[in-house]
Image (cartoon, rainbow, N blue to C red; front, side, top):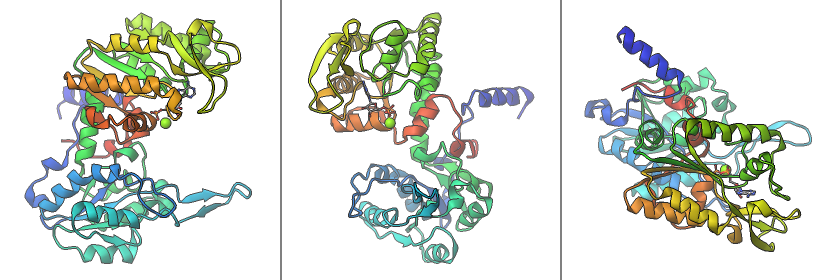
Length: 429
Ligand code: ADP
Ligand code: MG
């Protein structure tokens, strides 16, 4: 690396980007993979019902391209993941207790086997003799899943000895767990110190391509739509995106903090009174940067926070004192649709209203429908954030977006320009 290159390298690192692309699975040769034991960190943190049935297997399906690629090249695939939060804190005593029941990955092994059309061996522990035996039994092209890495407290503590034991099962490492890439845990970060090459899987590659591509090198105009409940959880992303976007559209519960900052009455709407100055500062910053910032002009207010509340649509300048805003109104939807007409790239994080109640899901659904139509016209549409993705899925429109991120917190941190330790630890291309 020359001096100039080193400087640029450092500079971009400082900005929290990965301009030096990460090495991916596709860069490995047939020889690198044939007969090799490959430890793959996946995100199989799926929702389970009370009978341990998987209620949504999206995350398992998202890992299939990487798993199948490895199988086809004769690798022995060793999958590891976390599921849930097995360490429970007793509220009364404060003591921390490990609860394995309901947090086992065994049901995931069964489901993955169905999806792959072949049995998936399940190891009852992710390290030690139990894991080693299952790995030894793997033939080329076969797949094993290790039990929940979070059954060991050392996982989240990023304990080096635990990471070394995990690494000792394999010859090389692939990280494809985008949803956990913002955590420096033993199976996402620690393990890369003992297992090389350490490369990105296809899911992480795709997430970076869309989420990072959208902010670093977008087709313009680039528009961000930011909603959700609180300004405080979105400050970082709004600030970062103000540097990048041509237009910023705000919605959701956070708008009321902006209105109050401007001296409007917001009734009983959600307001973070300690963020009023900040809201004002963000408005000023948008103006200074020449970013078009759109706040809704009308809202749907309710007499209480309930699905069957009484509701009415009012201009934001006339919110009744005893009512609370739970959705954006039709005039605002029309305004958003207008603003999106010429855009080439849209990033959406955070619902426009309390979409969990059908009566207040109208604004969110309308925005989702508009984005689906824009995608059809060639616009790149990217959805990040757990609830935003849930809202788009609920509307049945997930298949019509360019990219639906599998990582809630991770996608937000990436949009904020933060370094994701699980990705930073991977080798450069
Ligand atoms: P994401 O998970 O997509 O990042 P957030 O977690 O930030 O989104 O916000 C989602 C939550 O915001 C939803 O539970 C939704 O009910 C809530 N929300 C949206 N609009 C309002 C509002 N006007 N008042 C209260 N809560 C709201
Ligand atoms: Mg959320």
